[in-house]
Length: 446
Image 1 (spheres, rainbow, N blue to C red):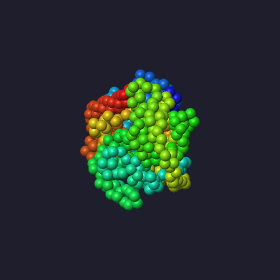
Image 2: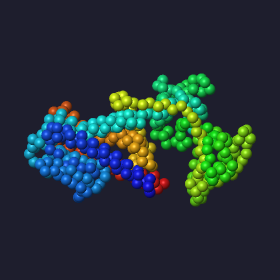
Image 3: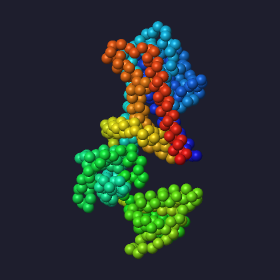
Image 4: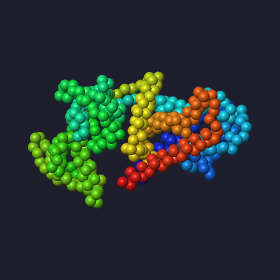
């Protein structure tokens, strides 16, 4: 319950900040061009609001709605999510959105996306300035990588050190590295001191990302690093420095494989409604092998740690002014990666992988970590900017599309057309929202 509350609080705080900044972008450009803003709300307020306030001599009512699905900025003289068509039947006023030149209206509509993207770049810059950047370079992972069966069929081998994909250097183990490998035609690895080229077949990034064991992972040696007193390993006599050889008769050559076997043990035990697990383990100590029975606790843990390697860590620090170009580059690369992955959403598997608020909340850490919180907030800001600029009616991108049509064709779409387009867009977005959260519910149940 505590974990749920911590993640929920982070999600609400992050989304509230992003909504304020996004709607603030629309508000800024609207007021810059002297367009009246009637409402500025965090979350939606059908029927009633949790809080509202209208300052004296102001045309804008500020408030907090009860439906946490975003927020809105109600601008006079435009058809938006408020569906205030009665106002559109009246003669245009000079302070209305529809009375302003198309160029000004275009800036008002892209203001939210622009501010979200700028916010992401700023957050990334401040993360680098505050915490710097620490990682283990792939070339310094001297034990190489651990690959699953599909990767081995392609030509990879356990222990390969990843060097490059299509000639581009692979520097660190992350999502960008996986994407580069999957989309490459040729991957170069270092094997037994020699460079080897591996020809890549056509793969789906979505399929690869969902594989278990992972297509590629950091290789962790099958050596016990520490044992907690009273745990399953300690009771069985396993000590620090012992090498794991076999699990229930299956040979294991890495700590990765040991963890995979532990996961299978837990899954099978839970299917049989058992509250703990037991397995036989062959281990080696100073060249002598022995076999023991190991009992897990109620969490299916053996209270031991292994596979730790003292790799060289690359630490990069940034001065205040140095952090901005680095943050901008990080933000642009994040946007490129997300935009590239969007093509998988329009596949059957991609539709199944869509997630709602549960999925978004799960990306936040279980404990409060400010660095991780700001990294996730910046990433969500990138997502919000990208999704909102898509040319879908009811999104900012839909309004931009119609404005571009007006500029090119030199005539506005009719108010009736805009009304119907807004309704269709809202229906599509609502359907997408229901589907994404339905996926979350099904994942939770099954």
